[in-house]
Amino acid sequence: MLDLRVLRVDADGVGLVALGSDRVVDVLFDGRRIWSFWVRRDTSRGGVGGLAGGLGRSITWPPAMRPHLVGTGSVTLREHVSGADVWSGEVVFTDDARRVEFVDRQGHPISLDKSDRFSPVFAERTAADLDPLLDAMGELLDVLAAHGVAAFPAYGTLLGAVREGDFLGHDSDADLGYVSSHSSPVDVVRESFRLQRAVAERGWATYRYSGLAFRVEVVEADGATRFLDVFGGFLDGGRLYLMGEVGHPFEREWLLPLGRTTLRGREYPAPARPEKLLEVMYGPSWQVPDPAFKFETPRQVTELLNQWFRGTGHARRDWERRAAQRRRRPVPKGSSALAKQLRRAEAPGTLVLDVGAGRGRDALWLARQGHPTLAYDFAPRGLQKAQRTAARRELPLEVRALNLDEWRWVLSEGARVSRLPEGPRAMLARHVLDATDEFGRQSLGRLASMTLRGGGRLYVQTWTGRGRGGAGLVPMKVARVQKLLERHGGTVLDVAEAPAGGADGGKGSVGKVVAQWD
Amino acid sequence: MGLRTVGLKRDKDLVERVARLEQEVADLRRHNLRLAELADLVQELLVPMAQRDQERVDAAIAAFQDSL
Image 1 (cartoon, helix red, strand yellow):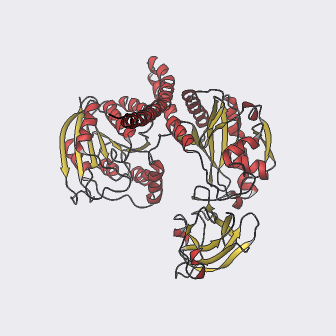
Image 2: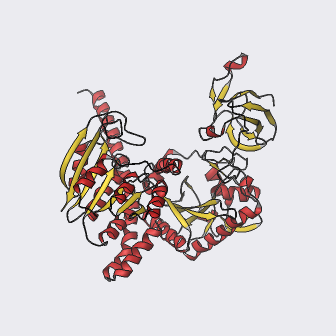
Image 3: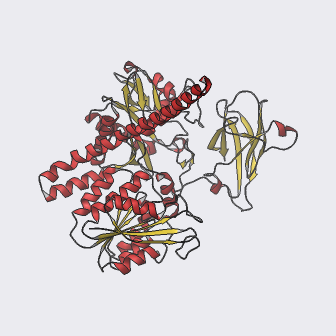
């Protein structure tokens, strides 16, 4: 391999010289693929000294890999398509006397998937591991068919089936797609809601990504959870729109009537001309394996799909990651000044709705003070520990998922709470308005107006823009909060602002607003 | 006002107008999802609520939320 020379592999990353056409290199640890990158597309100039410095390119280890790079590892760089090794050797990442390991908490070998997330990829799974997923795919296709939708393996799953008769080794989830008989975005979204309901009724856990895509969770033989994504699509004006990457000219005859494809020896439905769909998904080179593939969806297509279907989870992935990272840590002790303020002002036993409850510190504290408390978050995983503590101590705390970016969540929860037994109510919203988007802010106002009617009070705290505001927060001035709450029928009772460096736990300036709904 | 100035002003007006139209189209497209949400909510919850059957209302809300 004369036109690809690896000059260094060290604790920072890889330095190389790459001439000629771009290609994919797999990075193996102890002979097992962990990561892949394109030698030109994914690297940047420089970072290589010596004679080759001028031609040198380098790439650093992906952030997700770094926590694993402890001790020494046996690293191989292998050209993906030819299978030729371009570098091999022992690399000392840290002084720790241990081998670099890539396993999850259950001990399953993991590697980076196409989204740069670690998961047990298909290459590591045995037939027994994969049978439940293949069964689930079949069952899910049946459920969708029973509800009038002819679905088929899509994206990487279709690519694997057509090209290799198997899952792609570096892939970690299975994708299904369908093309609706409807042709307007409103109707296809309603259909997607209906399909999710049918799947949920079947007893599977589901999770909505957008107006036109949801996930189904399947538990495998060894307890690992595998995800099946269901992407909706429709044809309109000679174009196929398929969530989440396709918006291309397409013929109905290329889809229907569905044909068959084989995946690990089992038959599944497939588009009539699967190669046509693979071409719009992966480009004309879809037949060449590329474990480091990145979608290059045209900007107009992304914008169109965003405007029609997305916007149902502002920064949710970030909050879910934070929740997952912290979920095993103890719930912080004590309470915020805002929760104490609520406690002082409200009658004993007042029902508290803690919206954006995070780890559940305030919710747990309020439940300990005898307030029946509903702790809401759109990343409710972060509340698991608080929920367990409350259950153990028989505290009146209930954890509920709530997504302010979907009206269906907000309005149904508003209706549900309005039917709970009468009594005094209060809502705590600490760093919610400054963590969500405009739709979410209006939703909080709407939820307050639905649940607090009859004298209930809302306690809001936001970062107002000075000093450090905390991860994921945007400045939200008190005047704006006031206006929002008044717009939703609240009467503002109290407004206060504390400068940066104040006593309330954070370093940023904070505003507090209390409003009442009569 | 010279012809060149008039031309520049017209170009500027058109650029602004296109940007405004793009914004309006985007706003209209966003209504699809919200309209679908409202239609779904009404369809699933309106009937049990109209029937004023408390148990059915509770069951309908619980089933609705289980599928979100």
